[in-house]
Amino acid sequence: MTPEEAYYKVIKSEKRIPELEPFISKDAEYSYLYAINIIKGRWELGEAIISKDAYFSYYYAINIIKDRFILAEPTISKDAEYSYYYARYVIKGKLPDFMHNALLLSTDEYTKEYVKFIQ
Image (tube, rainbow, N blue to C red):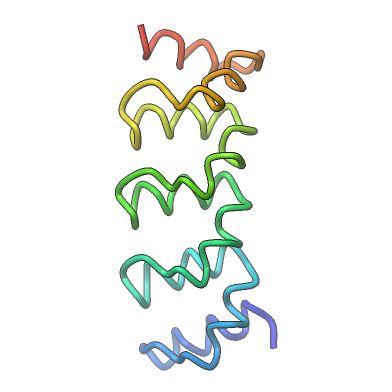
């Protein structure tokens, strides 16, 4: 069974189905959707895969954890756009040094926004 099939089976049932969770936890998007739509909170089984995707990591941090998602910070640090959003809306200040330094090395437009934001 694919993560998508498992997720939509759960959506159809409108309740948590623990035996389908290992399938869902193999995909960042469906793990995030499962956490937000079914569990309505933090879902540790899905965090490993979510943390490998900057987009879903940022949204997991802002919408579910409502704080830093430390496991995902190495992934987020490789994406200038989501590093900037993470600094601005999750941390609400300067990034941890390794993320800060990675963003400053980027030539992305979000680097300029970040520099303005932290000054």
